[in-house]
Length: 431
Image 1 (cartoon, helix red, strand yellow):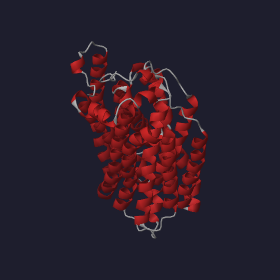
Image 2 (cartoon, one colour):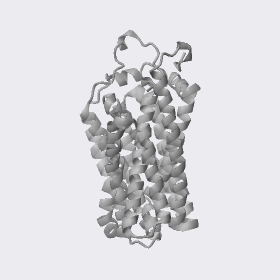
Image 3 (cartoon, helix red, strand yellow):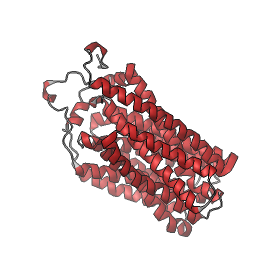
Image 4 (cartoon, helix red, strand yellow):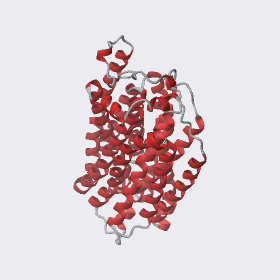
């Protein structure tokens, strides 16, 4: 399914291109890493109603969205830097650095006494999350057989909404009783615990996938991604990731506040947040099962359609708890699953040595969308309330649906070319 085949490699790497070995322990550890990342990302959205009421901070709707988005600016930088650094010092060391940074960010967030301090804290959190998430995803995918690609990516990335579920469950008793600060200290403490687990875990460095990644230089990897047919795939992946994450992460940050704007109580709004993330976890495993049988690009069309249907339903259906929960559930299934499937397709559509760099790209561009989502959501809720938020995110979700349809076409083209006899001069091999 690759856009090209790897160039000839040194003899010591001969016979390592097959992806048949699995390391379940590493995959599970990577999921725990993303659980804590998800907690630290999504807990901010659950705390937004109380952050806005904290007069000591003096946050406005627009400032709250901007601060919420800064975590993703940091994550973009972390995602871009992580693959190259990991090739030099090893993925385990990079994981430890990333986890340590977002633990520090949690402490700083919980200690914030001003908007600038809160902004810096969220940026540090994001930088660590970007480093750890890209590295954890690549490590997990490189520790699995090719026939379980979608399932492994889903298991790993299920940690993000699962962390959100934990955040929502803890928020229900903690926020009303103790305020917003303890939530971030809990995130920092659990991150330190996972950091210790990573330090004790042995992460293989000799899998076929890991070995292949060291056979090409960074320049060769970029050449495959940013020239010829590879450039088309790279652009389509970016549009998919950005459009999807504008809607998905925007909902994570502004979902609870939108529900209070519609007249729901804080407890019901937090229940909606739980539904959003809970549906994301359950739905992602169902869609992964389908993707490993029918193809990740094909199934991503169905999941992105779920997001559109859920958002349009919020704009057109009569307001009730029942219809709201159904629509929110569809948003959860669509937003999270679509991103998983885009990552899976990205990992498979490029040559094996390019995988980590390509995943860094899909993660990095997804964080661009995750930054824009809270910012656009803040502007939309200030201008048009909950209706404005759902309208903006519905437009973004529709753009994502168009983009994943294009990605499916690119994936099919790549699959066809990979199974055809292609002259050497037409390949995307680096010089």
